Amino acid sequence: MSNDYKNILITGVAGFIGSNFAHYIAEKYPLYNIIGIDKLSDYSSRTNIASLEATGKIQFIKCDISDYSALDIVYQTQNLDYVVNFAAESHNDRAILDPTVFVKSNVVGAQNLLELSRQYDVKRHVHISTIEVYGEQAPDVPYFVEGSPLNAKTPYSASKAASDMMVRAYMQTYKHMDIAITHCANNYGPYQFPEKLVPLAITNVLGGKKIPIYGDGKQMRDWLHVNDHCRGLDLVLHREATAIEEESAWLPEKLPIYDFSARQEHENIEIVRIILDELGKDFDSSVEFVHDRPNHDRRYLINPGKAENELGFKPEISFEDGLRSTVRWYVDNQAWWQPILDSSENLQIDWATFKI
Ligand SMILES: NC(=O)c1ccc[n+]([C@@H]2O[C@H](COP(=O)([O-])OP(=O)(O)OC[C@H]3O[C@@H](n4cnc5c(N)ncnc54)[C@H](O)[C@@H]3O)[C@@H](O)[C@H]2O)c1
Image (cartoon, rainbow, N blue to C red):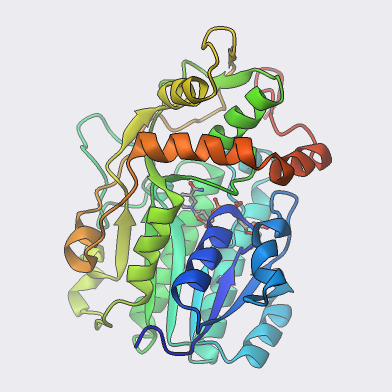
């Protein structure tokens, strides 16, 4: 049934996870008609989907999800079955510089999509959120789960938490709609814009620059390969429909919310060590410790138990293998990232001198 013809809208398709998901869907569901939209921000790259466009496997439309009228035309013309929303401003550093654009894309844009999915009777709507909506993990909390309170503390995570609340409101108010939310651990893999830790570290070394490590580098992060994330999203997109129960009003874990992690928690500094080892470089001469970002989350971890039990989710890529193969992908694909670096301003912010 899942391989029947379907019109699927993937938003944020020129970004890291959205483009990987488009490749995944094109490969696994060749009968699906993929429509990809993106506003093509300075931190995206349409070349991520160039091979899909060249083979006619995707139709790309430039569209800003915070522009309701433009988005309405996409819904009017495409007869959508599925909507999967990856479009978001996604970088914590940039959110500190300009929170407004984060609210516009991540909150207003997400609500525009929900409303149009309601107006046009979309069969299934999946909203991609993040582990960061749960905020900072207290020392006595082993991990977050779907019922954990939303407690975002940064402008980026607050904008994502705000859209989570709106999605939950749609789920419970418009019960005929079929909506799911996913929260995911930090992703790594191909096509990640070289401003985030893993691609920044790799491309800096390949470009003869040092790797900046924020603070002491001991921030703990929960890591999942982007392909495993796509497998989890596939399970959510094609799961059996379930009714929204009354008690989910006070038990949010009963809502269609799924947390994805590979239970792989590592310090940032450890990630850098593996990257340097794969590139055959020495640690001390390749890194520089720099002023930490203000209000940097120290640790967060989610438990994927619900996704494992209800959806049969099981990551297939071990952390070290996945990270090493990611390093090799960047080594082999300089033609992808070099033009991005050449056309981007300095992607690192000097927090020692920056006034907030
Ligand atoms: N990268 C991670 O580790 C991670 C982890 C968990 C959740 N997420 C979530 O996954 C989603 C995708 O993240 P990503 O890492 O691929 O980010 P990304 O920044 O690489 O991609 C986001 C894409 O959305 C586009 N976009 C932004 N605002 C838009 C708008 N108003 N209209 C249309 N397009 C717009 C950008 O141009 C970009 O191509 C985000 O919602 C993010 O919160 C990411």
